[in-house]
Image 1 (tube, rainbow, N blue to C red):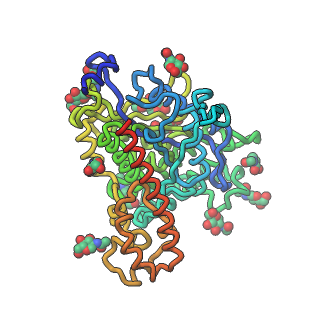
Image 2: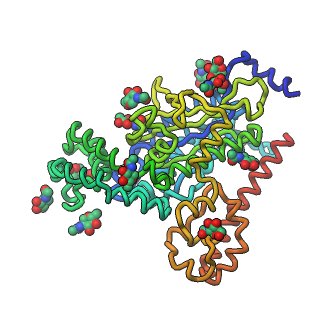
Image 3: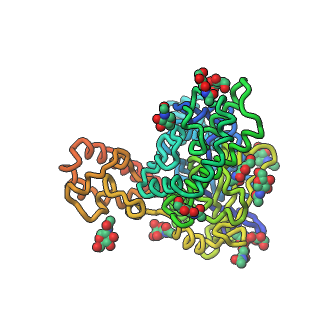
Length: 467
Ligand SMILES: *[C@@H]1O[C@H](CO)[C@@H](O)[C@H](O)[C@H]1NC(C)=O
Ligand SMILES: *[C@@H]1O[C@H](CO)[C@@H](O)[C@H](O)[C@H]1NC(C)=O
Ligand SMILES: *[C@@H]1O[C@H](CO)[C@@H](O)[C@H](O)[C@H]1NC(C)=O
Ligand SMILES: *[C@@H]1O[C@H](CO)[C@@H](O)[C@H](O)[C@H]1NC(C)=O
Ligand SMILES: *[C@@H]1O[C@H](CO)[C@@H](O)[C@H](O)[C@H]1NC(C)=O
Ligand SMILES: *[C@@H]1O[C@H](CO)[C@@H](O)[C@H](O)[C@H]1NC(C)=O
Ligand SMILES: *[C@@H]1O[C@H](CO)[C@@H](O)[C@H](O)[C@H]1NC(C)=O
Ligand SMILES: *[C@@H]1O[C@H](CO)[C@@H](O)[C@H](O)[C@H]1NC(C)=O
Ligand SMILES: *[C@@H]1O[C@H](CO)[C@@H](O)[C@H](O)[C@H]1NC(C)=O
Ligand SMILES: *[C@@H]1O[C@H](CO)[C@@H](O)[C@H](O)[C@H]1NC(C)=O
Ligand SMILES: *[C@@H]1O[C@H](CO)[C@@H](O)[C@H](O)[C@H]1NC(C)=O
């Protein structure tokens, strides 16, 4: 039966096939962070749409040699694809723009015929709706200048702050004073004088870079912008990753966990789930780069990726079996800096400091597990958070343990790790006395929604089995 299934593929024995993929993407051009209420611009919308269009031709078109086996070409099948983004205007809209390109309006193909014979087409020429789930961390990250604040991870915040007391930092703070002084007239009115330093390297670069794209008033020169970019890279890379304090890279660790979980689901479901897409900020790219040892392949990986950059992990095989055993699977990592347009394509890079472009599935799993955060319990332990959702993993259960409750923690819910949380309802009920009934209602409400979504997914899986 399996060989029968393999025949319609009509592929030469050695042709590589893609069985699943996970894409992590940065938003497109947006307004400046420092001005707040950040928005994706029309330019940014186009950038993300262009990058999404590339991935449509790579993964979705049936005539692409890298199309994901069995993925629907024109009408989206929601059980095959999942998309997520933090609760952030720029990132949520970027995710939608990307998905518009992945599955464009289907026209007549979306028509459905009702019982009475009426034909109905979706609005906007058969626009296809694809939900974007909310990841728990990274809320408002495009409005936040301070990289770690949106992670809610206590030890990561402490670790990043250590950078500001390091010799590395203070020497640059001193030696770059004249650089920032020389452009202070461009910042006046937006940054106060004490903020015109290397401490705000990224915010300053971001403000002037956005100005150079959108503001007709003459701003920083190209040389100045380049210098400010290099300084921002040093600051941001050091805030995002440090080899001796891996908790600093918590954003990358969570992403690694999400990638592992998604690809593993493709493997364990024998290819029923096929494509995962997540939007996030450059800080997550930098953290992941450090953890995956990508700077060993190129210094570029210590530099902030441009707007609409993407990286993808592909589950590939040379086996001719419809869905081969895990031992015949490999993972390929690709990255592209900035919008993909024209004949551009992402480049393959070796992960984890090895030399091969692809890595066996089993090595990928074991190496990723070393850097990834895969459960709420692990996240709580690593971050040293003990309140909110972490209270159930903390040993002290008295009121004393909740005194450290940060507002952000009580509202955090872990993306993709619902199982341990669900198992802890009992403990949460006990805690309700301490936390207040209101908080519990909110918590259970969210849990209920998630539960319903999971049930729906399970049903979809069942349907797939029978169809
Ligand atoms: C591949 O398929 C797409 C959409 O089905 C089509 O637009 C494109 O022209 C095809 N490319 C080739 C080389 O056949
Ligand atoms: C890691 O961080 C510590 C403290 O912030 C700093 O002293 C050290 O130089 C950093 N290591 C690297 C490799 O940057
Ligand atoms: C900023 O503007 C104020 C008022 O226009 C002026 O007094 C001040 O000197 C300016 N500062 C810099 C650094 O240009
Ligand atoms: C200058 O800006 C910084 C950061 O935005 C702020 O913390 C500080 O209070 C400001 N100082 C003055 C004098 O406004
Ligand atoms: C454009 O630049 C000028 C001069 O630097 C500044 O005063 C103005 O606020 C900027 N406008 C926007 C929309 O950023
Ligand atoms: C993959 O999923 C299976 C089934 O849910 C689970 O038992 C296994 O631990 C997962 N493996 C990894 C590496 O996450
Ligand atoms: C590094 O980036 C530059 C400019 O973006 C590019 O030309 C070069 O190929 C990149 N190097 C590697 C190893 O990817
Ligand atoms: C992206 O390109 C810029 C140059 O435009 C480079 O400086 C930076 O290092 C690159 N980042 C990555 C991750 O390749
Ligand atoms: C498939 O075979 C080609 C040609 O030998 C090789 O380059 C490629 O790395 C192989 N891919 C996998 C996933 O083994
Ligand atoms: C490199 O990958 C190929 C498949 O793509 C595999 O056949 C080969 O054994 C790998 N080499 C090493 C050293 O892992
Ligand atoms: C709870 O106690 C166990 C055993 O004493 C210990 O291994 C674990 O690290 C503790 N967990 C926390 C969050 O303190």
